[in-house]
Image (cartoon, rainbow, N blue to C red; front, side, top):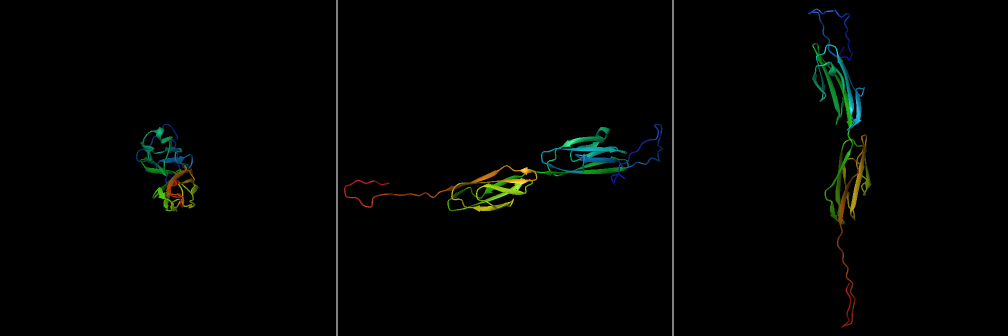
Amino acid sequence: CAAAGIEIVLSLSASGERYIEGHIVYLPPSANFTVNNTSTVTIIQGESVTLRWVSFGDLTSLSITPGVLSNATTFNDFVSDEVVFPQSDTTYTLTATGPAGSTTRQVTVNVLIPPTLQISANKTTIIVGTCANISWGYTGDASTITWTTGTITNGNLTSSSQVCPTDTTTYCAFLDGAAGQSPETCITIYVKQIPTASLTVPNEVDYGNNFNIQ
């Protein structure tokens, strides 16, 4: 019954009833285990969930992993709850142990991670007429990228693009995903201009006269 998730409740018929050694039959412990009153939830990283459990029957110790409860032996621990803040996808496992063996229950928390965009370039200073390669990638849960400044139109979440600006240009983008929007991330490509010069003088001048050179 425990393996099938059926919870067994035993009660005595009278306060004076006695068990006869050799005829006592122990049953695997019963347990009910939920997260936010269900078996699977999805949250955004940083949010909390509440684990609730009730374990009873022929029970001697209770553990909940990871990091919730370890070999508890008191009634207050057998029927309780706890708020947790999982930072990544986590399956919590309750193990109730008694003379007739162990019963396990599991709940799962799927954690969506807000996206973060990283942008880099093989060089951030170029001479006008040359090019640079801008690369980008991400962490977290992202579905789209939007470029807000610059000339890049590549919509792949992880990719690169060659840029050949004729003047100093800043390229900015942000990500959208199930866990929200990333901060805008930017990179600037500085363009050095080739120096130019001009010289103005008269084509001819009479001997002895002064003239201006610009």
